[in-house]
Length: 177
Image (cartoon, rainbow, N blue to C red; front, side, top):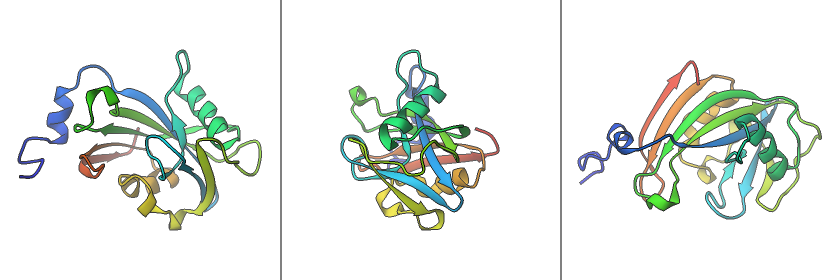
């Protein structure tokens, strides 16, 4: 029996949630037709390529958290941020204490203080051509939305994952985040 047949749909799951989603940031450093990604060394998303990001600390705005995370993970300081998208991620099969459900605000940075990001304890950065991204080693949702963000198209998206972190529900609304 499929998840849909058992009633585990994106809209049904969202109705079971209490309170707002945990907030997080995700930032992509873009120069022309290239983007810097970091390979996560450990923890949630280990061995996956992604942008820099994470949760705001108490009292931090999303923008401040984004700048701090880029500094910590890539060793560079963004000169400006452009918010491009909002992503809502739902993990109905994760243990409740894992608190994986989250709303991620996506930012694009085209100007930063030093030319080359550097390796950190958390991430190993590498530059990729935008038309040659390593989707086989990224979160499965990235192939549905990352091209929109990197092209400057604002959007809002929702993704729901099964026990193996495969997408079982999704929606994308183009136009505003």
